[in-house]
Amino acid sequence: MSTPKPIDVTYRVDGPPGAPVLVLSHAMGTSMAMWEPQMPRLLRDFRVVRYDHRGHGRSPVPRGPYQLRDLGRDLLTMLDRLELARVSFCGISLGGMVGLWFAAHEPARLDRLVVCSAAPRMLHPEDYSARADKVRRDGMASVVDAVLARWFTSSFMSSQPDKVESIRTMLASTSAEGYAATCEALAGMDQREDLPRILAPTLVIAADQDQSTPPEQSREMAERIPHARLAMIPAASHLASIEQPDALTDQLLEHLVKNTRP
Image (tube, rainbow, N blue to C red; front, side, top):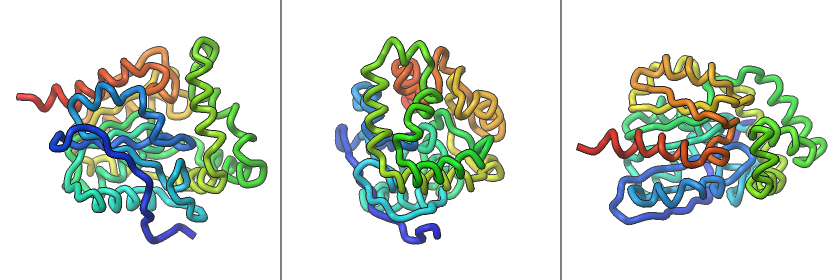
């Protein structure tokens, strides 16, 4: 059964008090640490809140299956604990899908939204149900190599082995139950009807070689969100924040900072 009660996730707050608040939400199978490449530039303008989804990093691991709304309610609980009435939000992959839920269900609490390498519905949800079964049966090691091959281009994997290894470590150390339960959340997710309800200024970021959430999905999503624009990151696969960190951070700041300055 889906856990009806929100949990207290692990979070970290950095940046100057009084600055606008930006929440960063990570990909499935990683942790808040995946945002390190973006932090130096973001901290010039924002007080940044990072957190680990349920079942990930240092957050609790309630038994699954989960639903996407469970992760969304965890986010709201964290914002309440921090007494944050209104924030901007940037999520990649799973984090972007949580961002869509947040934008559609709590519009008064959202200033600006950035959704990276995400989709309102997975193209092949049955694959995520099968992956959940595999991980529960055989452990995280059984899926790590296949996931990394979808997350990064072959050229990046060969030229930047240390960066790939850091993500491999995050993925391999993720709780098998937490990962499997999150796979089930993605398998059951369909937010397509929610997209027209998203009123916040939205940037949809796609990576041109993304195999997990192909650019066509991002393009369609941007067309259905009323105040959205699409940005394409070249020479990157699913985790563009790692593979092309400067290009992705440029887009974030263009949307979150430059467009709000008088």
